[in-house]
Length: 139
Image: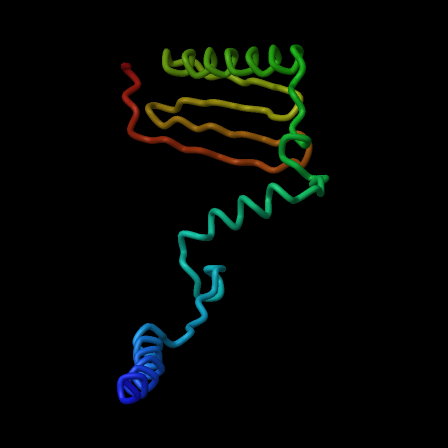
């Protein structure tokens, strides 16, 4: 009986030691933030958490910077577009023309199939010239 108890007392600590070393592994640190080597799929989650906690207001938000144009501004833009379209239609018929707005002076001349568009900025005096050749004057 004494030998049995000696064997049991020797086997129990040995079995605990063997089973404990078989289940242990090396501790490895893996960062959560993808900027520091973590999983890239964590980026969206971390960004959403940060944005949900952000209480600061951006003074230059694009929504705050945009002003809705007034009805008069929209009507003026629409009218200028219509007049410019009519001017281009008249040039297609062989006529020349000019359109003067608050900001620009547009002159269109058709010389035997060579269309010249001269745009002058009334505020700065800058001029742009667009020349289109190869037009058929019969059309």
